[in-house]
Amino acid sequence: MSRTNKIAVLSDIHGNYIALKRCVDYALDKGINIFVFLGDYVGDLAYPQKTMNMLYDLAGQYECYFIKGNKENYWLHYRKNGEQGWKDMDSTTGTLLYTYRNLTDRDLHCFSTLKHVQAIEFEGLPILTACHGSPEKVNGTLLPNDARTLEIIEKDANEYILCGHTHIQQKFVHFRNVVLNPGSVGMPLGSDGKAQFMILYGENGSWQEQFVSLEYNVSDVIVDLKETGLGKAASFWYKITINSLHTGRKSQSHGSVLGRAMDLCKQKYGLCVWPKIPEEFWEKAYYEIINEDEIL
Image (cartoon, rainbow, N blue to C red; front, side, top):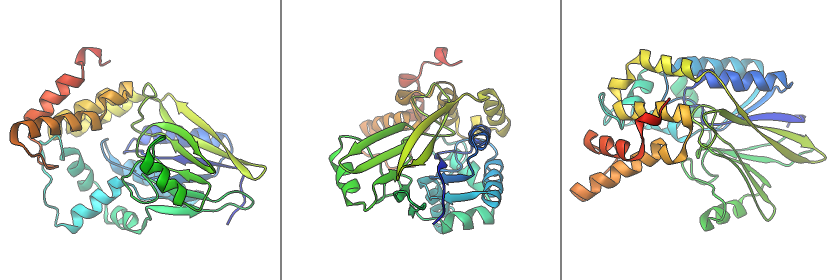
């Protein structure tokens, strides 16, 4: 247990070390020296080791808490399963494979030690339940007015639940429970491309949240992407990433295009099992959903 009156809560960096630096610098300027990270540290973007090195440096200088996200499980399961099933030149797994090849033994060991849910306690303040998706499932989602969500949060012993995964900043209250999602640092949705995180202020025995959205140099992130060759390794995933970095539109997210690609695959073959999604369906889904003339 430690004493504090403010902490920074960050989630879903997805390898965007440029956005991460912007958010961390802002927090440090506010005198914050305690950080809670809710998972999905790398994936999608270039040079994952730059993000990991930043996180290691932060952990060495400040009080930091790290939660496991679904991306961390991807890397661990891929190694455990003999590194089978992912391939280059594939919009479904090309970026996953690129990231995995750039992770070190230290990174994978670090991921293996993380918990998917953790109670974090600060003196004189309500205990925080920190998770990535939900307290029950790393890739779950906590959504307002959703019956399953309400069941999950009613079971939690703590008043405040911090979660990520949706990439959307959000607060909702259900009886005594307060669910707070800081949005995404690296691939935010609904933010016009601005990096997002949250500051919690501990005052009078309770927490007060401040949602933060920050402009940063998106162009540098895209330059990095182009240098890696991910445009060939994961063609349509790469294109969606470029669009999302600029616009942050939920309707044009990776999940939206992936879902449509899988629907198209099912229509043709009657079955579609991730990650076996032919490129033809990625292409069709991409051009149905995204108008390239609107991309900056």
